[in-house]
Image: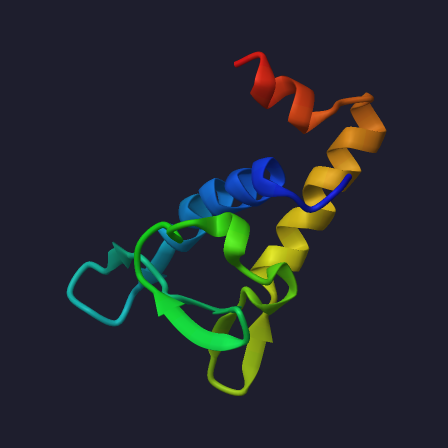
Length: 100
């Protein structure tokens, strides 16, 4: 699978879904919130608390969540998941997007 405008758009959609599933149980009853994603665009560091605008210009391997001393490279993880699904089920997400 190639990293291009279509795959970056799918990854941005999926990242937004994942980020909205963060839960803080410390507050009364807890609550869900959108976890900020950090990334680079043209070498410049950015942070976003909404769906990433213009995802085709984002450097995929820089998309990450920072939690304390740890980092989850969500862009790379989602790319690997999509690639796995394409191979396992003989899919082509680019073709699917073109026909949706």
